[in-house]
Length: 295
Image (tube, rainbow, N blue to C red; front, side, top):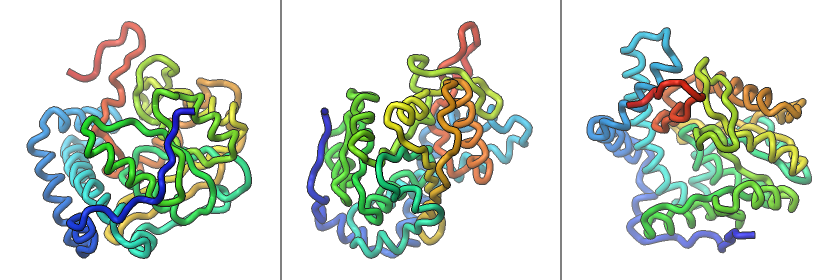
């Protein structure tokens, strides 16, 4: 299996350790400035966010789309800078700022568990805190970053606690199935458009979306319950909500299972749209004969 395990992350460069000790309000203010700058400068990405919001919230006035888009970029900037303290602050700081709620017992049961972690702003915070707090074997898929220095920083940051197994994306489902059969909790992010291969078209906010079937396939192949985990950014840090394991899943019908995943995700997104990662072109893959939705 192509995978990596490393010791707990080193403390990191001195300047990062110093930044990690700054008060959270100061780091969040800097993150808001960064996000505002991205909102202004990254025009193409801003158009993607507004298009996604317009498609998913067609009955909502445009001014609300712009407000959600602004907050999305601010949250993105804040979440980026929060990695500094998530990966370099003392462990006690991480435990204080990232609060776990909900059905933690669902993640502590013996045997494999499949964690459905949608692309909310607290994605990295949830992973960091769960691997810190729950003494069990973990695994997740890792896609290499384009810049070597960034790849090294992200990789070590995500392996800071618990000695998790990282499965290279080129391993695909095979590597994750092996991890499940080893009794690991596998952190999966299946809510993006990865193309038509291995996907079915089911609604997401009423729009046909190419939705990968990996969540249901892995649950069946690995004999694992699916436990959703939602990480949301807030003024005190992050709240990580662990929901109960889904019953009757997978059903054996890949369309029904993918539709359930999107319906559950839609309900969570609706509670605060600006917490979701709208920067991705969620509807770039279209059903045969359908016109493109992004210019």
